[in-house]
Image (cartoon, rainbow, N blue to C red; front, side, top):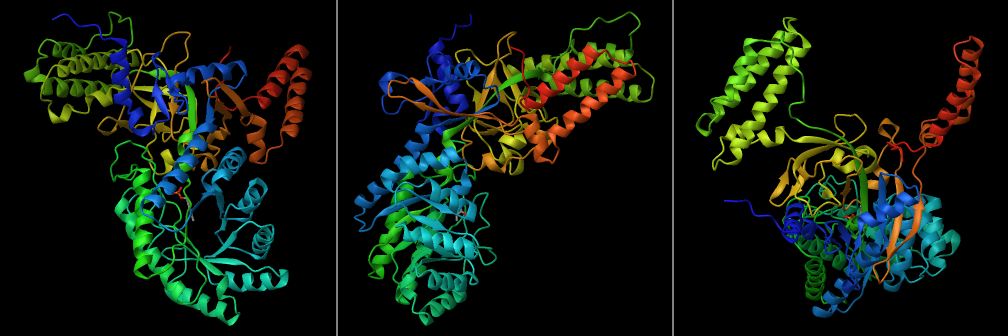
Length: 640
Ligand SMILES: *Cc1c(COP(=O)(O)O)cnc(C)c1O
C-alpha cells in the first residue's frame, strides 16, 4: 500500500498529543498552525496566539542571546485571577460566610519583577505576601501597594524582624506574626510593649496529617516546623498572663508543597480546623485560618496522584477547602474565619519558560569511514554475516551475537592486539547491525523483552545551550520532571529520538526522563538539525523554585531574562530585560577580582613581548580578547 502523505493538521495534532501540551499547559500554550508553540490569548482568542519563535526573533534583534528565561506577565496575572476567582466561586457555592485572602510566599520566586507584578496585579484581590525572613519582609514591604493585603510573617524572628513587622501594622497593613517556636513569644511581647503596637499573632500547628508526594516531610511529630500541642498551650497561657490573648487571631499550618492527592488536603484542612476551634475555645479572638501552600502543579498532565501531578482541579481544591472548613466549624457553631492560602508553586510555575538552542548532536549510528585493505579480521567478518541471518525469528540471537563480537574486539584492543582503526570499523558495523535490528523490530508485534530498551539505547544526544544546575536545579536534585519540547518545526514529523545534555560537561547535567503520552519516557522526539538553522527547545513550568536555587556549577551564571506582556491584539512588548551574568560577574562571586586579573594578564603578555615570543601587536590582540571575554556571556555564544 502506498504511504499516505500526512496532512499538516494531523502532524500538528500528533505533536499536541505526544508532547502533552494541552494536558500540562493549563490552557496557556498551544501549537499554532505554523507548527510553533504559542502563548494563548485567553482574553481575545479570536486574535490568535503569540508564537514563541516570534518572541525569540525579537530577542535576537535585541542581542539577548540563548539561553533565555522568558517570563510572561499575563500568565502571572491570570494565575492570581484564577485562584482568587475559584475561591470566590467556592465561597458562594457552599454559602461560606467568610472571605478568602491569598498571599504569595516570596521564597518560591524572589525576583523583584515577579514580586512587583504580583503586588501590582494582586492588589485588586488584596493578594498579599508570605515572608520567611527579614530580607523577604523588606522586599514585601517595599513592593506592596495595597494596604488591605495581608502580610504573613513565618520563619524564626529576631527583634529586628519583629520590629519591622510591628511597624508595618502601624501603617495599616494587616501583618501577622506567626509563632514557629516558643522562644519568639517573649520577643514579640517585649517589642510590642516597647513600641506601643499591638501585634496580630498566629500560631503554627505541627501537623500530624501525612501527605504523599515529594515534599512530604513537613508534617508529623519530627517536623521541624510548628508548635506541639503542649507548646501551643504554653503560648496561650503566657499570652493570658500578659493580657494579650486577644492578639492571637490566626491558626497557621503548612502540610508541604506539591500535594498530589486531594484526600490528603481534606484531611489536613480538617485537622487545622480542630486546632482553630480549640484556640477559639481557649478564648483567643480567632479570625483567620491559614492553610499554607501545597496546591500542586500538574507537571506531567496525567491528572493522577503521582508526585509530579495532582488528581484535582483548582476549583475542586477550593471547594474542598471551603467546604471542609465550613462543615467542621459549623459543628462547633463557630463563625467562619477568613481563609488564607499561601500558594506559590501554582501561582508562578506556568509563567516562566527556559528557552535554549541546540549546539550539537551525537548520533549512535555508523560514521562514514574508508576501510583500508589491511583492516581485516574474523570478528569483523562474523559481525557482517549477522546481516545474512537477520530475521524476526532469530532477532534475539542476532542481537546477542553483535554484542559478543563487539565486546571481543574491545577486549583485543585492550590487550594491544588490534589497533584503533580496526576497533572503529567493528564498532561502526555494530551500530549498523543494531539499526537494522531496530528496523526489523519496528514491524514485529511482540518484542523480546531484552530488546525493548534498544530504541532508547540508540537515542541521540542533543547538546543544549543551558546549565541544568543553574536553570533547572530540581531536575538534578530531586529528579523533577518538567515538560520539554521543541518550540518550532512541529508541522514536521519528528524523525529522531534524543536525550538532552547541558553544557556543563558534568555527567549529571542531562535530562533523560520526559513526559510522554502515557507516563514518563526516556527519550524526547525531536527533529534532525538543519545546517544554518537554529533548533530551539523550551522547558516549561519553571517559574517556581528554580531561579534562586540554581548554582554556579562550572561557573555558568544567571541566564538572560526577558519579560513580555501580551497585548489584547496578540502583539507583545518586551517589558523588562535583564542581561545574564558576565564572566567577570561569576568570577567575582567566587572572590576573583577581574580588575586585578586583567592587570596580571597584561603583565604576563608584556613579559612575552619582552622575551620576544610575541609581537606588541599580538599582545594587544590577546589583551583585547581577554577583556572582551570578561564582559561576555557565560554560555555558548554563536557567531552571528
Ligand atoms: C514553601 C511554603 C509555601 C509555598 O508552598 P507551595 O506548595 O509552593 O504553594 C507556603 N507556605 C510556607 C510556610 C512554605 O514554607
